[in-house]
Image (cartoon, rainbow over all chains, first blue to last red):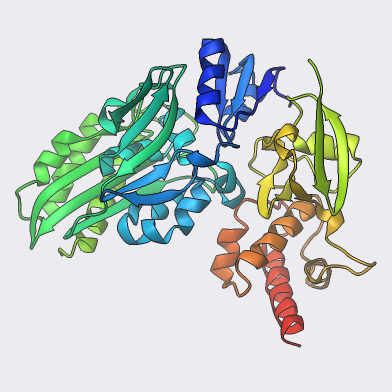
Length: 289
Length: 161
C-alpha cells in the first residue's frame, strides 16, 4: 500500500511551515509522526495534495520548565515523554500513560502534538490533556493564541486547530501536593486503541476529596470530561460506594460507537470500570486511602 | 510527480536514489537498493517485520517516507554481521531457535539490536515490553526471549573480557 501522490515540503522553521499552510489551505496536511496520517493516506481516507513535514523543526521538540509550568514541544515523541526525568518527577501521569500507547517503534515516531491535533477519539493524549487541564499554543499567520484543552476537542477529527495553524507547545502545571493521577486503559492487544480508558487527577486532604478531574478515551465522539462524576467526589469523604457512584455517572455520560472492540453497552461498562480503578489508584497516590 | 534526489547512509555506505515523495522507505530499500532483508508484513505499522534503525532509533519503515531519510544513518539486517561473523544476536537466535519460518526475524533482530543498546541488562519483562512492536506467528515468543537473553549475556561477557 502506497499513499497517493502529493507534493512534499520539509520546512525548517514554524514561520516557513505556516507560509506553506497559508498558501495551500485545505489542500495541505501537516505530517508529524505519521503513524495516523500515513495509514489513512494508504487507505485513501486522506489525500492531501501537499504534505508539510514538520519533523525538521527543532524548536518544536523538547520538554522544559518555564515560569512554573511544564512546556512540551508538540513534536516531542512518546519515547521522549517516557524518558523525561522532568515529567517523571513533576507530571508522572504522562510518561506512565505514554507507555500504554502503541509499541516502542511507533512511540519513537508518534508525537504528543500529533496525537492531540489529529482529533481521533481513540487517541490517548486528548483525555490526558483534559485531566491535566493543559493549554495549547497554536501559531498561525496572525500570530499565536492559547487554547485550553477543554475548548479544543470539538468532534471526531474536528478540533479548534485551523487549517493554517500549527500546534507548537503544550503547557501543563506540575502536579500539586496531595494530588495523585492515574490512567487505566483496556486494550485488546499491544498497538490497539483503547476499548475504554479513563484519566483521573485527584487532590486529597486526608480522606476528603478536594478536587477531581475525570476524562475518558474512546467513549464518545471525542475525549470528554465527566463533570457530573467529578461532582460526586468533590468535598466528600471517599468510600467505595462513592467511587461506584462516580463510575455510574461516567457510564451515563458515555456514548461510544460500536465496533470490533465491542458494543456500546460493553464499552460503557468498561468505561465505568476503568474509571473506578483509576480513581482508586489516584487516591492512593495522593496519599489518601 | 517529480522525483526527489535522496542521499543517506545505508549500512555504512553512502547511497543516492531518486524517489517519489510518496514512496515508503521499505519499498526503496527493497526495490531500488535491493536490500530485501527488511520484510513487508502488515504494511500498517503493527507487525514490525520492516523494522530498521534510523539515526539510532528503531522505526517501522512501512510508515516512514523514504524522503524523510534524507541525510540519515540507516541500518538494516544486512548491516548486522561484520567480517563474515554473525552478530552475537544473530548467533543467539540460531543457538536458541529464535525463529521458525524466519519471516519476522529481520525485524526481531533489528529491534533486538537497538533494544540491547537501550537496555544492556534487561529483565524478561523488559524484553517483552521492548519487543512488543514485533509479532511472530510461529514461536510463541519464548525462544525469541531466550535468544535476546543469551545475546545480552554474550555481549556483556565480551565487553568485560
